Length: 419
Ligand SMILES: *Cc1c(COP(=O)(O)O)cnc(C)c1O
Image 1 (cartoon, protein in one colour):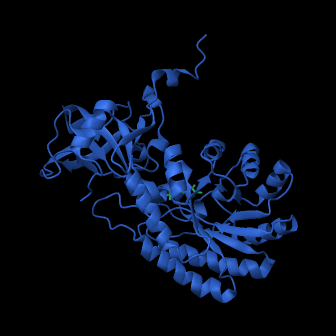
Image 2 (tube, rainbow, N blue to C red):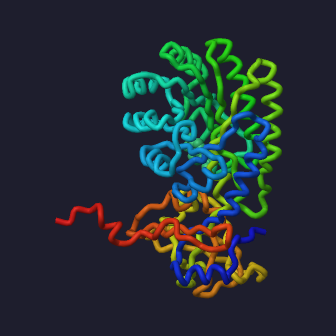
């Protein structure tokens, strides 16, 4: 059973001050997740998590993660600017983008970020843009073909199989890219790959690590490049459904350590640092979307209309993603009613749940939609003039802080030309 990190009583107090819908994040949960992750990789010298900013681009969340020792993984100009404003610099910033505009490489280089090249043609493009090749550089690998290990149906829609995914370089291009970068003055090399999204398997990271470690040994032999870091990227998933087993990050860290000792250490590469760019694993379970029931409508089905919509959480509409729902105050009531839980968009896919068995719902009930802390508010949009909600932080002392106000109609109108 999934248990909300706030009680009904707490939520009613919060909702009296900040009207629903809103996203709320659990500071204690975020800090715990970061600590458990760091413990799992404590064996590796120089290990660092670069939180994928796109998952939850909120400065207060980034600051909490910074205090826990995390860097940030950015993939756009505004994400780089946010990282800079939050005080991240140099080695604390990873820039893993694709189809990258010149100005983004320019800012990444200015901030001293580690640039992760998505394509071999970007070497020339980067050199032309910033005038030289940075001493420290990374290349993104795509092994092609198919990769099946614990990815969910929905994860498949995010990433596709490597052979169909737009990201990264072929094996031959990796060798060529390293040779060219070395000729152009690069001294420290990294390797990155992201093969599957939202994996529920303790084997994903170890399998990916083994692929990258073997390639690192080959690349070192072929090119003589000094490989100093390997980036396992994102993709460690969370159990969105209550019956799914959670990943055990300690077991995952141990599996990666085994591959490291079997492959890298014997090749004299026992000084390679590892990094990760987790977004979902870090934040998803530490966020709820809180919404109130406005209407019940009975036609061919029984619909519960809430005050949130797909503009606040796009994943169900976009991927058919499951998000668990708790009807607050009815945690122990039998789930003997079947509902579609819908938002107000003029789009029939604006449904948080379809044919979901829930306790009997009354108008005015508060619903917690679980696991919305990553790729939730971040994916918000303004279709139908529905505006993005506030974001709140449940702090470790139990108090609640507004960390992003709700958009107002004036925000929505601000970019229009009126006469
Ligand atoms: C989206 C993304 C991540 C984070 O993915 P999660 O599924 O949230 O772990 C990491 N790295 C890159 C380059 C990404 O695009």
